[in-house]
Length: 298
Ligand SMILES: [Zn+2]
Ligand SMILES: [Zn+2]
Image 1: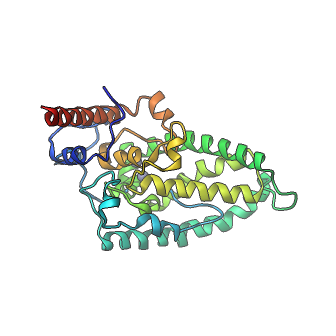
Image 2 (image 1 turned 90 degrees about the vertical axis):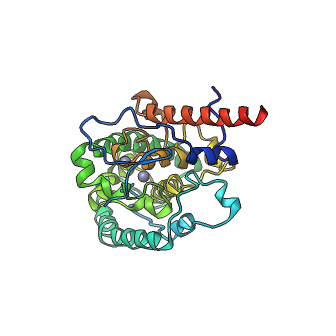
Image 3 (image 1 turned 180 degrees about the vertical axis):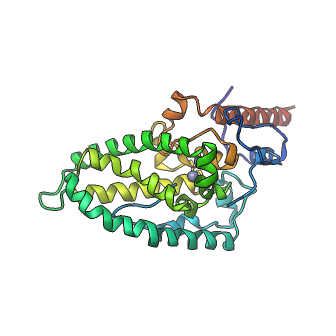
């Protein structure tokens, strides 16, 4: 089975949303309420009252504007992960207002509180500036620490209590867009801030490195929530990188999802078997694609 079928082939996209194939997540918890709504792709959770997107030092909320724009062009539509799902301007604006509230009332005070903590753990603010090698090696360590810790906290948030009380806010959008990266309950913003700050706390760096780290983390979260998978994206060259399509599946399955918890790399999901639903889903789609190709040839 060819596992590298393009998600952007016209016929394939059509079949993705027109054929009735079951893509239920086999890893879903038995006790979880299964209130999804049948859709051509399997089950899609009805949007109800849905990652941490805050950074402790630098918040580039306006960057999300570019990621959130849903351009109505054929060229861009080719790269949309869920081509039939389009968010209205009103939806996006509501999301934007909510995210701004979280930035002002949760992330802002956290940033102020984090200053003495950073001094305590040894974050440097003076000369000499860090070398390129120091910055790069620390960034790699921070990404690995963030990814592993985020995986488990995110997985914990998918227990019945965690989802019903907190994580449902982030899953409001079953077809996410840039702003949805930071659309979280205030408690989730705090909880998932821990993995981001754990690396710099364990391996103290210069303030410049910390700023680069928080910006990269935020940009990465926006990209994985953008709803668009571009084949020419340089992040495609990063081994085991999550990407938009991978995380989109997590949102698509919604409430009952026990798949694709990873924030940056896919290896934790693979090791702990929480990507089985996603792999089955891709296999099912590949079969459909193969059928379309065979139909064309006959
Ligand atoms: Zn998400
Ligand atoms: Zn989730």
